[in-house]
Amino acid sequence: MRVFIYTSVVMLYVVSQFVSGSVIRYSIGIMAMAALIVSAFYARGVYSISGAVFFGIGTILFFYNDYPWHTFILHFEQVLGLLSLFFVLPFMNSLIRVGRYDQNLSLWLQRGATNASALYRRSFSVCHLLGLFLNIATVPLLVKSLRVALREFQKQIADKFYTQNLLRAYALCLTWSPMEVMISTTIDITHVRYYMILPILLFMAIVMAGVDWIFSSYKYRYLPVTSSGPHVEYPKQVYQKVIQLLAMLVIFIFIVSLLQHVLHKGFLFSVVISLVPVSILWAMLMRKTKRYIVIAVQHWKERTKGLANYFFMFLSAGLCVEMLSHSRLRDALEAVFQIETEQTIWLYIMIGAYFLVTSFFGFHPLVALTLLASLLRPMLPMIPAIPLSIVLICCSLATVMYSPYNLSVSILAEELKANPYRIGIWNIWFAISYMAISIFIAFMIEKILY
Image (tube, rainbow, N blue to C red; front, top):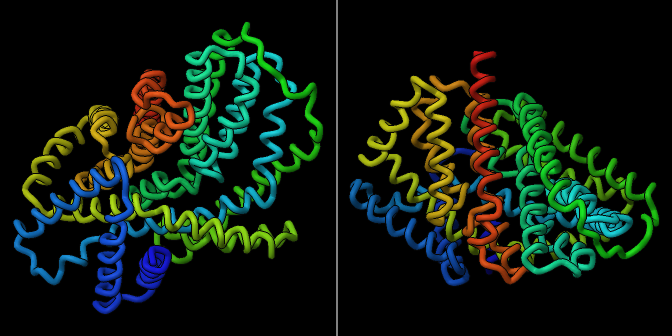
């Protein structure tokens, strides 16, 4: 039943982008409410708690604002784009597995590294590349691949290696990934073009990766690793797979940008409707269409059933943010941010501090960004779009490295049987430095271009 309800919500959302009217709005509202109710029975952990809190606050504010009761179901729409992206991502994940891109990169990772410093750089690169396509599934995959090489390490040293290597690489790859929901959401908020911020985001990722590699080369250079083989068996095949992945990424970016320009429906929506056709097209080029469809459909069903956490939390958060945007509290918060628009450097610092604080209170960065967007919307014409986009993207995605409530940290903590707060502490200073550098670069771009 979950698969049917979630699919209905997403399909109605897509239709609503081309067909307007009260019938389609109420249809979406009814199915969104059904999805929320069903998800409440399956949501777990922080998602269940956060969703219940958001729903409670949103409901109280709904009645406080004295809206007609029959409009209650119409206040979930603004998060449907985010949920739609989670809904279609499994089709790209399946493509990576069908093409055996993950296996080839894992093979390259395990062979030939003679010390921990070289292994750190290699696993960082593999995580960065796979993270663009496999998303969070990259972390447990690489933990498994690294276990043999790190089995002689003391547990704390090995855990620190996993934490700093994988989470930093994963966060930096998300910084410029066109399939990352934080990027598409930010683009729809600030109305910049993806190609305008891509070079800056890539530069940020390269700089921070270089800094991390320099420090790791001193930290791990004398630590030998257990190698599973003397050399890479199929170097040409590995290189071909890397080139194919990059080519697919370039094609995907081009198609998404073209659709955004033609349809004028926003970057996030363009990603949602492009991802499945591009994946099928690539499977056809690999001549594995039938196998891909069988695996993709099965994987999609499994992942869709597991979306209860996201549907419950984000639908509840959508209601809460929508109600907050029409309350007096929103006016007070907006006034705080509006004071800083005269000196944008302080606004950028405040945004960084906002994500830092909310991440330790259990706010998912998407929820925090959605709330912040409603506060910044009246001020957007006065704030330079490109610098603001850089700050929003980098500061929100920095939480991937350290927030104990973030899915990446939670999954790694579960894999390592470690405390998520300790994992966060190992990355907190790197994450804050990343935020600070992004704020500095954004401020310099503002001074040069605006």
